[in-house]
Length: 291
Image (cartoon, rainbow, N blue to C red):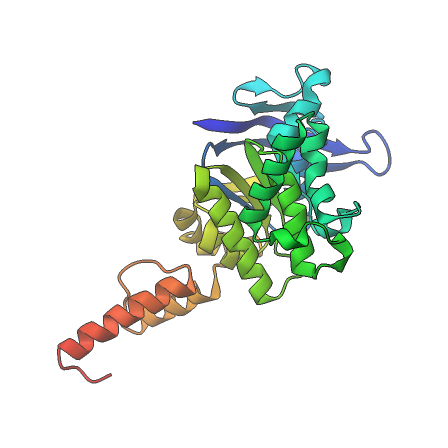
């Protein structure tokens, strides 16, 4: 079932001026309910412009955005409700923290939804559990937190609204490997807890291989590919032409196959490579073959 759809979506910045620029060019795509969908492309490909349309922060120049079949702009008075249903976490969201305490920051969205204090508190606590923030942090100033903790607190603020769709724009940008892994694990846990719909924007092919079941590839304001992650990564030559590449571990395993060490199936993550290589070595040893 499709939860979000765009039909011939086009956005032109500064139309009819010397600064006119086409941000999105006739984009038609769909996001499946309960999926983790990745949107990938280089800086300037239109990724951020696209996701700002999905929750109504930008209005199309032409075309439509449908949420569960209904045009989100059919009634301008309802666009605020759309933004509660389609939650967007901006790039570097920690810079948007502003309240006195972590609790108040996470509670800001649910409070604006008009919920009672008991429901707000439960949502704050649930969101903290999803992103791995200890409850002892809730009365601290958000500015006392580390960079990774601030990022998780900002994500929790959107999760607390319990959106139908959670969109994250470059959620691991600027984090060290440990922080990146923690954020990706939090996102996976959030998705798996209720088969929630997640849209993840990034330029990292490695991150997408680890978490996304489906990919939308963008270049120059257009969608150039969309499909299952494995299907997209199998088109390595086409990805290369638009300046993207498959994960390094995938390239390594393809080279091993050329040398006669075939792991039996495509490899997109280091964990999968380790598992398949271990199985291969065990079979070789069992057969009395020295490695």
